[in-house]
Image: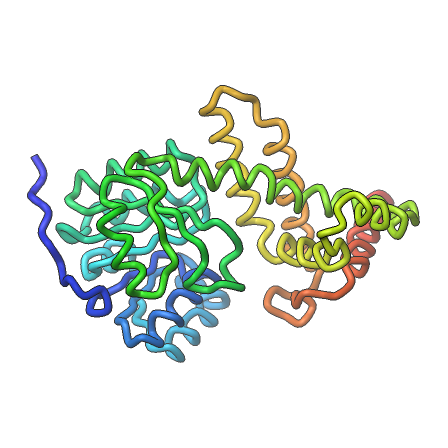
Length: 317
């Protein structure tokens, strides 16, 4: 039998906020919370790396974010935990935090995981006396920052929603049933992540045949509301920079489709294309991560030409 949940500090701006995952999303949330003088601590497995961890430690010092040595250390001191890690780590992180989560502490699962994964994570946190709420981030975080549209789910979602709003989030409850918010996110991602992969495949192939202008003109005629040049550049750069994380997310999308009883042919292909681009990025094709060449280019053709060059080079070897 678990201990009864207790009420923590009622003013969310007095919470000790713990961020699990100090990547792009975690750092944005940290910056926006620290601007409100909210106490923030963070943990990321990359802190163990001298190279990757150095940049994270520099950011934390700059913004007054305390860093911890483990998931459990962070969970033990946090009133409100946000898990923002790669999709495959959503359940393992919940398990690690459950070992020391404070009674009554909030656990917001920000991850793009399947409804089944969210339910498993919830079971671990709630069995330990924490209050689990699933969060489904409905679009790219950077343009909106902390105000990114967020759907909440679970029995404690309605209680957490107004507290998140006080902290600056734009959150609304999708359902008191776990898995509904995630299902909305996952089904949307079949389209959005799939469109990214299709644009890279279509545009790069068109570039190889020298027909890209005709293809874009045809797309503009069919979908006049989309600036395909701008959208293409955006999709290329997002996948180049975040393809590894995106491929993991789409594998969770595929699992969501399987849980519904369908074979995820589209999602599986999208995951493979996203991972393929990530492999090229890891090989240094697009420059160093965080370098100028990862800034969004106004012309996707530069990246398509690099991809085609890499294909030709590999075919010769």
